[in-house]
Length: 77
Image (cartoon, rainbow, N blue to C red; front, side, top):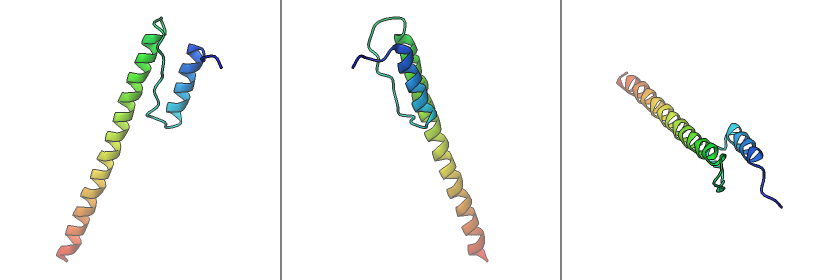
């Protein structure tokens, strides 16, 4: 089977990210005008993955803080 065309590769990557597969990265090694596009896509995907993970951790921390405050309030009573 032949390698996919660059645009097909990019569209597949966009589809993967949009479906929540944030660890998907494009694998493209041709040294042509499409390589910087793939590099930029992979950088964007990496930053998005880190951002989503940070938001998830912040939300967990917020819930733990609220639960702790709630428990302390009712432990006093």
